Amino acid sequence: MNFQAIKAIYIFEMSRTIRTLIQSIASPVISTVLYFIVFGSAIGSRMQNISDVSYGSFIVPGLILLTVCLQSISNASFGIYFPKFLGTINELLSAPVSYVEVVIGYVSAAVTKSMVIGLIILITASFLVDLTIEHPIWMIAILFLSCVSFSLLGFIIGIWARSFEQITIVPDLIITPLVFLGGSFYSINLLPEFWQKVTLFNPIVYLISGFRWSFFGNADVSIGYSISAILLFTTICILIIWRIFWTGYRIKS
Amino acid sequence: MSNIIEIRELNKVYRDGTIALDNINLDIQHGEIISLLGPNGAGKTSLISTICGITNPSSGEVFVDGYDIKKDYRKTRKLIGLVPQEISLEPFEKVLDVIRYSRNLFGYSNDDDHIEKILKRLMLWDKKDKRIVELSGGMKRRVIIAKALSHNPKILFLDEPTAGVDVDLRIDMWKLIKKLRSDGVTIILTTHYIEEAEEISDRISIISQGKILLTENKNELIEKMGQKTITFIVETKKNLDSLAKKFDLSITKNNPLTMLNYNYKTTDDTFNEFLSDLNKLDCRVLNIDTKEKSLEEIFLDVVGK
Image 1: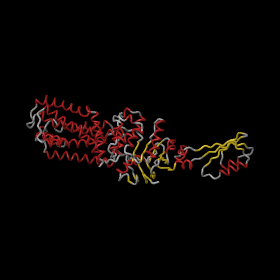
Image 2: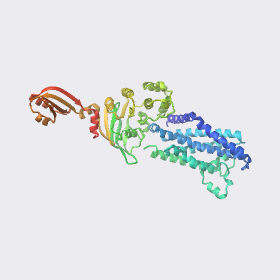
Image 3: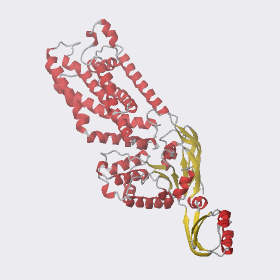
C-alpha cells in the first residue's frame, strides 16, 4: 500500500478546501442556517409536533443529510474532475499508485469535509432548536456512512462528467429532488397510503429515516432496513468504481 | 550495454480505430539518450504514454529494468519520470507544494534538501513560494521537469520538452539533459526539432504512422544514410560526358570551367577510380567543396517526404 500517496492526495485536496474556506464550509452552513430560521423557527413554531418531536427539531436530521449528501457529491466529483480537466490526472496514472489508493485519497478528503460541515450544522442547530440525540454513536456512524456512499457517488460523477455542467446535473436534477421527497421536512406517514408505497422506492427515505431514528428513537422504516440500504448503496458505488478503473472508462484512452 | 527498457510487439488501437502503435519493437539501453523522431500523429506520445501507464496497450509487452509494466507497475513506475508535452499544473498551488506532492505520489516522504537541489539546478529556487499561476510559460516548463525529477528516476521521458521555449531555455535544457545522462539517467526524448536530436542524442528512432522505421546510432545513421555531394570546379578542354555517365555526375559547363557534382557515400568504392579518371582527362582541379546531408534531410527521406 502506498500510504505516502494516499496522504499526499488527501492533504492536497484538504489544502484546496482551506484555500477556499468560505466557499467550502461557510456557504453550505449559512444556507442551512437560513433553512432552520425559516422552516424551523419561523414557520415551525406554528406547526404541529410530529411523533412528539417539535417540527423545528424534526427537520434537523433531514437538513443535515441534505447538505451532507450534496456536499459529498460536490467535493468528490470536483476533486477527481479537476485533475481530469487540468490534465494533472496523467501524473496520477503514471505514479505507482493503485486505483484503491486513488479512491481512498479523494473520497477520504471529501468525507472529511462533509463530516465537518455536517457537525458544524448540528452544533449550529443545537443553538436554534431544542435537540437531543438518543443514539449518538449510531448518529455518527450513519452520518459517516452517508458521507462515504455519496462521496463514492460523487467520485463516479466526476469521472463520468465531461464538463463542469455535467457535474451539477446529477445532484441538481436527481439527488436534490430525492432528498426533498425523501422525508427531509415531513414524515412519510403523513402521506396518503399510495404515495407512502411509492416513496419507499426512494433510497434517500431509508437514509433520512435511519438518521432521524438516531436522534429521536423513532423512524418511518426500521433501522435494519436503513442500514442495509446504506450498505447496499455503498457496495453498488464501490462496484461501479471498480469497473471504471478496470476498463479505464473516461480515464485512460 | 544492457537494456533498461524492452518493448515487444506493442500495439495500440484507439476506440475510433486509429492505429497509434503498430507492432513496435524497441530496446533502450542503460544510460543512453534516445530521440524518437516523427511527424505529428506518428505515435511518439502514445508510445511514451503506454510505457508510463497513462494509456493501456492493445497488445504486446513492455519491460522496464526487467519488470513487466502491468504486473509490476509499482516497480516500473518508480523508475520513471515523465515530462509531458502539455503543461498541466494546479494553478493556485505553490511551486514547492506541487513538487512535494509529486515526490509523495511516488511513495517517498518529503526531502526538502533533494527538492532544493533540483530547484536550484532548474533555477527555480527563488520561485519556490510562488503560485503556479504567477509563473511564465518557461518557468512552468521547468516546474514540470522538477516534478518529474522529484523522486530520482532512473529513466526520464521528455515529450517535446523544448516546444515553444526560447533559445536560452532550450540550451539550458540540453545542458540539463546531458548532465542527467552523466549522472546515469536514461533519457527518452521526443522532439520536432531535428537539430535537438542531432545535438544531444546517442541514438535516433524514426517513427511514422505507428511504426518504427529505423533505430540507429546517430553518427552511424548520418554516415550510413548521409550522402556527401563533392563539387569539383575543373578546367579542361576534353569532353567529360563519358565520365559523367560512368559516375552519374551532374555537370554544369561555363567555358573554360566545368562544375562536377559527385554524390559520395561511405560505402562507395569507386571514388578513387573517379579521381584517377579525372586525372587521365587532364583536368586541372581549381576548387573542391563538400556538402553533407543533414539529419533533417535523412529524416525526410526515411518518412518518405
